[in-house]
Image (cartoon, rainbow, N blue to C red; front, side, top):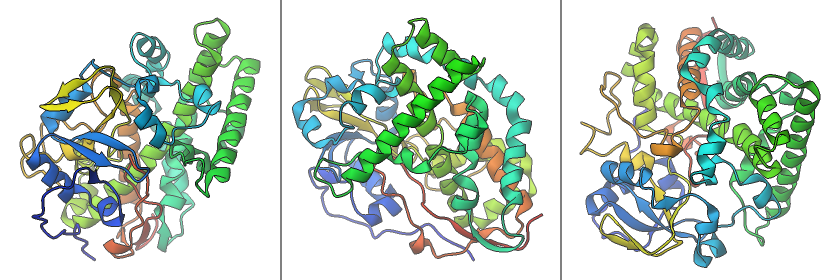
Length: 420
């Protein structure tokens, strides 16, 4: 079955102010809206489902500049009262205890904290781990049905990134087995009056207790791995307890769900382009370049997290009040025709490919090398071992996650001829 990317009717109406970033059609295919926004200008006021009004940067050059603009800080303390009233940020004390990680820090604190994690994710170390990562992928495929159909999220994509992450950061197997994937949903906080608030707070408490167990285990065993070194840094006064807990929180959540989502968006793109899927299956040497194009074509990190000016500032011709949130659309930047020829096409031969899927500047994703290796191994293993792999539902039945900042699917029903 050939699946084409859903086409949206051309909308000639003027853009709303603010532009609403809501609804199932938008989540299923945001690119027509991003195209209209890019054509109208690089910066637009937008409205999120929570009621937050923010400023969205959409063009490649504007996005690249914003990601490197040292006037824009990430610390939540910079946010003004208008933002804070609607942002539904994590409640205290959890916000103070779990949200002082790298994504919410500015130099020099950011530089200091980042220095503790970079060695664990160097390209050289990840290459050394590739055989073990391949074993993890093969074990998951071994557990899939021998033929027929399955949900690749439940059977593969939801587990592979976390098992890999556990290997890389030194999370013991017995603790890794007890991690609840639902805890990752705490990065999508809900407001105080939301009916889902009790469940949200229960997940927060569960995750905090889990992090405390990880810290206790590492302190007792003194392992020479990333988690062990972070605990030592805390005990030596180089990190506060809140910084330690927040960094473990970020590793466990940001190191798993985005890769799960990127596996699903990459597979959907290949299902929509069966000729490219066949090329990649028949020529595995294409995989590194193909992964870069799949990252550009539909990134799991659709939007960046908040940035703020600490004073009224001008951004590409638009006046931004101090403390208003500024967000960069990585997906819109990666489809900008002024930077990429035929940007909506999936071209596995595209080179060079300076996409922004992992961000840019000082907040460039420290786990990029690991994510690239995971995607290469995951896609290569699935295409090689599941001949005839195809989407088992219509495009309109794909369940896109409702997350504001990310893209991915909750389920990915597929069929295949047999399991090799």
